[in-house]
Image 1 (cartoon, rainbow, N blue to C red):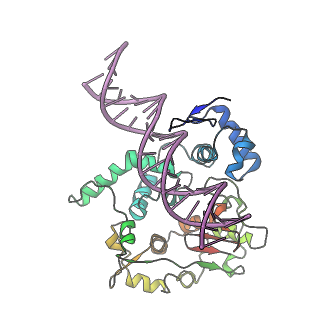
Image 2 (cartoon, rainbow, N blue to C red; image 1 turned 180 degrees about the vertical axis):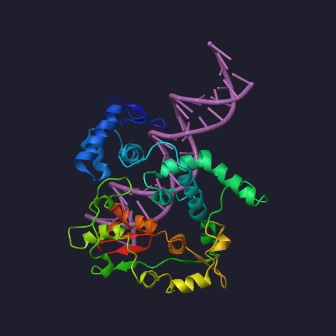
Image 3 (cartoon, rainbow, N blue to C red; image 1 turned 90 degrees about the vertical axis):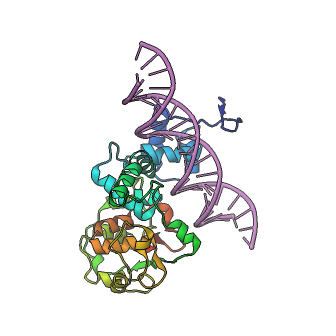
Length: 292
DNA sequence: AACGATCGCAACCGCGGTGGG
DNA sequence: ACCCACCGCGGTTGCGATCGT
């Protein structure tokens, strides 16, 4: 068998480096035939002499039909910059808000274009800012400087009235890679996952439902926290009165509420990879949101 | 035309989280 | 409680393409 040189100088029988067209088509056929299977089974089923990681990466970053190629639109770039301010280098989270774009694409695009653009913008507004990269709330979390408030899981009752009579769109049962998935075991509950996204109808009592962030109501949150400066630095997310800081999920939720970005919210909630489905609970857990 | 510098992006690596046995 | 396999993620590298001199 042909041997390939690994980085540590040892030889490996697994192929590395650029993928050939033949390998691509084998992987594509395998994914089309078997759908979402364990990545460790992919190399054998596809007849590829590649490690599972390599296969996974190739599919998720390049071959998946849902991937949008070509240049980033201005609005996409703008969204990336704003989300990066909010989330830092959490590329997968950012990618989750940009349909068709992979975390790797976004990371590469950021490193080659947007980081400079973002710094230039910052400088324009605040010339004192020195190009040292963008701030992240992570170190502050670690230092324990703030109490991080995470939203509590939001549970949607199966018989919740606003879920009823909504059309079901199968395309919403797709994971991030665009592969059709059936994330829940067959049960009447499944239908609600699809219905949720399609609910252009905002529930009348939306505010009442969406309050479970540290036991506060949305009204209280909006009174207690400065949320007008979303996209600013960590300090701007700080509680007015005490040293508390909103988690990114909570900020996003408030952002959504303030900005009526309901579409984004539902996009987040329904673009759920199969691995997020807890087998024990038979529910989806996503960004602090639980769907029964 | 030649060649070095820079860019863009695919691919790899290693770490941390998770779940099953 | 522990170990191990698996997976996803972010950081980094490698290399072909393009640009500038």
